[in-house]
Image (cartoon, rainbow, N blue to C red; front, side):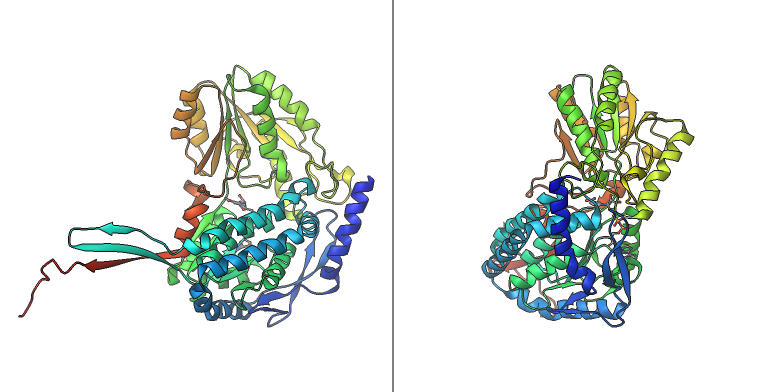
Length: 506
Ligand code: NAD
């Protein structure tokens, strides 16, 4: 073990100690509570599947209490001047930055993501709050729309209390992505973090309290999707649901929210293609292909899990790729050298491993990896895997594996690439590597996805829209798109007293 790893483990233990000693509850109406029944579950670390502590299982009564608190706090928060909300949200960002090391170490221990990536979690989380904080004073502004005898203007009002339901893959960053614009808009929030990785959501709630958010503006309920998540999406006080997770769960939430006509924003699964043409910059494309599936343990919605490789460079590219995949450093998430850590949970690890069997059954070649790394101990370690000689009908090309597993498929022509890229129920993101600008433009028009990157890995720009098409999502967030989701637009029409008002019964 390296000195640095030992140091990180010691520090992480210090931060994690309190979660072992005390049951983690809910944060409702400005206070911590063990809820109505106090029933708990064990939160396991993917490093060795031991317990990091007990977490309260949210009940319907707990969710009701959180929603009532959010409803009561709504008017005060929504009516607070945007400039004041801006100040509070910047304080929240300060509080996050002050705890950056703690957030990184706790997040890595809780969800298995390598520390090298989680060091960015707090920085990016704070940046999300700062970006939307700065927009809060202008959030209500609308348009002026002129007619000859009337003038229309629009204003935006916060929609009401909202639910934010997040997954376990990069829990801290993803939660801030939703919660920051919701609060900047004037909405109050009930957050339900994923049951596999609840710890940093608690730190986030503490940061919110420290920043001086009024009681009830931010509430956090732990627990399982089927009970706590479901109750949240059904509660009549909740006006909108921002959800990140699996496509199937998104469908359930849409049905659960239908009787109360909830507005929904869904960021769901993907089977994103990275399309590498013969004329691509070989080295840059190789770096990006490796990064976009093996970083963040491949547990990333925008990961490029299907490599579409043109026949002219296929052999050379796959040979170089295999060498890189074989060389990826798998290990303890707190080791600074680690590039791929353990997968979040035993059930997910087993699901990912099941695709090794599926690949063999369907006749693909396992060019790299293809097995568990049990030599690394009792954690959920999987060898970074490359499947070659695959086609787009195989299970490994159709289903979201959500692990460090890449399926390579050969193509001949631009038209083939488009057909294969679009032959999927998903449409979140895509990546195109070519030195031909016209082709890049044609591909950008034809590939069905909410987001496309040309000659780049995933580069996030907060003012740009984020979201998917087909089974990958509903709606967009980022920049003004987030305000559109968390706010209602109202049109006010004022007459110039020039028109004739229609007359009846005079
Ligand atoms: P999941 O759908 O199982 O769970 C996500 C959240 O939903 C959890 O908090 C869970 O408790 C809750 N939930 C489950 N059932 C519910 C119900 N009936 N009602 C309300 N809430 C419920 O997803 P996961 O396994 O935690 O995360 C992995 C998935 O997330 C992958 O499919 C991945 O692609 C997707 N994801 C998408 C994006 C994106 O931006 N498109 C980003 C990250 C992750």
